[in-house]
Image 1 (cartoon, one colour):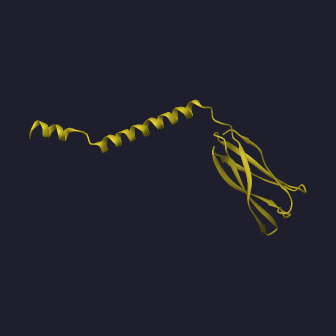
Image 2 (cartoon, helix red, strand yellow):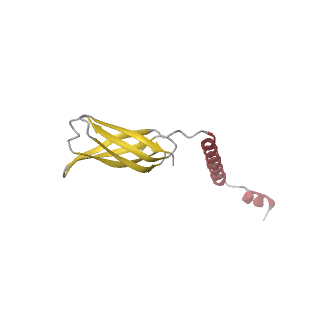
Image 3 (tube, helix red, strand yellow):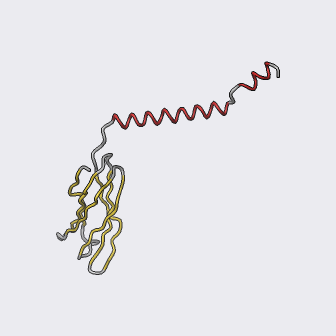
Length: 128
């Protein structure tokens, strides 16, 4: 083999350079993301409660509720309460709600919750 042919075969292909550059970009991007998450303070739990469905059941009504934690930090023992306009109240407790996640629960009422205004809120939570 001539020296010129050997030099031509030892060059690194462009595709290999492209894959190496993409890999380096992914590694540095991951490191930057992890450093940013470590330096930035985690946001406190922030809740959004909404009605999914209202269903007539034997002996009353079931209101399926979605509870979303829009904060970064998790919350434990999340107490959710629903109060109808007439004063009837119902509630449930979620054992754990991770940051940036949602869970479902159900409220039971004797009266029809559809025509009345239903107020939903999170009464409180504990730090896990």
